[in-house]
Amino acid sequence: MQLRMSPSRIRWAATIAAMGLSAVAVVLGYSLTDPAERNTKLALDIATLVGLIIGTAVGYTQLSLLVDQRREERTKSLREGALWYSLSGHQEVLNAIHELEEAFPKEYQEMKPVSVSAIRDNEKLKRSLELVLAHWERMARTIFAEAADERMAFESFGNRVVAFYDIHQDYIESQWSGKNPRSYLYLIALRPVWAHRLAQEGPRPTPFYVQHPPEWYAQSGRVPDSPPTITAQASVPSEAE
Image (cartoon, rainbow, N blue to C red; front, side, top):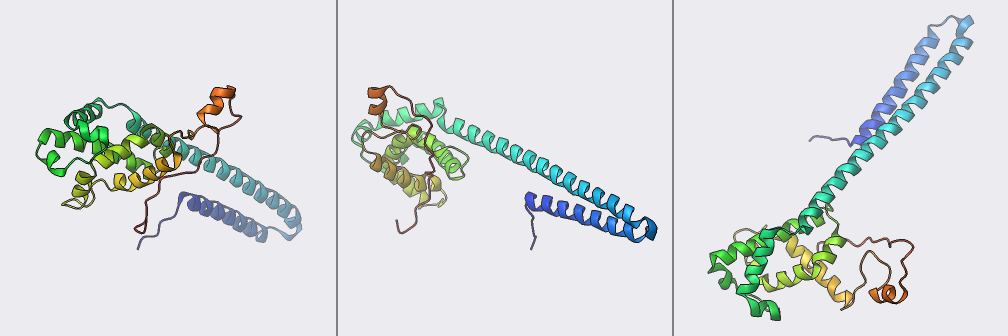
C-alpha cells in the first residue's frame, strides 16, 4: 500500500528536518570548541540557530501563501470555466430544445411526460434529446464536484432543468436502468434537490444574492449593505428520501 503525504505535511516535515539539522550542527560545533571559547561560541551559535528558525518560518509562511494562492487561482479558473460552459448559450443545445418543443408541443405546454417509444422511434429527436441531457449532466457533475456555482446555476436554469427532466423522465430512467447504469447519475441526483428548492420558494422567490424580495427594492429603492452568506449546496439524496 502506498502512503501519500499532503503538500502541507511535506512542508512541515521539511521545516522540522531543517530545524533539527541546525540544532545538531550547533551541538557538534559546541562540543568541538575549546572550553575557553565556549561561552562566546554558544552565544553566536544560539543567535545563528534563532536566525535559522526565524528564516525557516518566514520561508515556510511565504511558500504556504504561494501554494494557497496558486490553488485558489486554479480553483477559480475551474469554476469559471465550468460555469461558463453550463451558463453559456450553446446554439446546438438551444436548437435541440427547440426541436423537442416543436415535436411535443402539448407535452411541453401541459408538463406531461413524453413516452420512451416516441423518442426511440425518431433518430433525430433521440439525438437532440441526448445532446440536451448530456449538457445538463455535465452541468450537474460540475455542481456536485463544486467546480461550478450551484446557486447561480439554479437561479439561471433550476426551473427549466426540473421541467425538462420531468417531461423526459421515462427516457432518462430507461437509460439509467438499462444497458448503461451510469447514465445521467448526476442529473438524476440533482433533480430532487432543485425540485424541493423550487417547491419551497413559491411563486415569488427571493434571489440568492440579495437579502429581500423584489417588492422591497421596488418600494424602497434601497440597496442592502452587504450580500448574504449562502451555504446551500446540492447534495445527493439518500435512498430513504
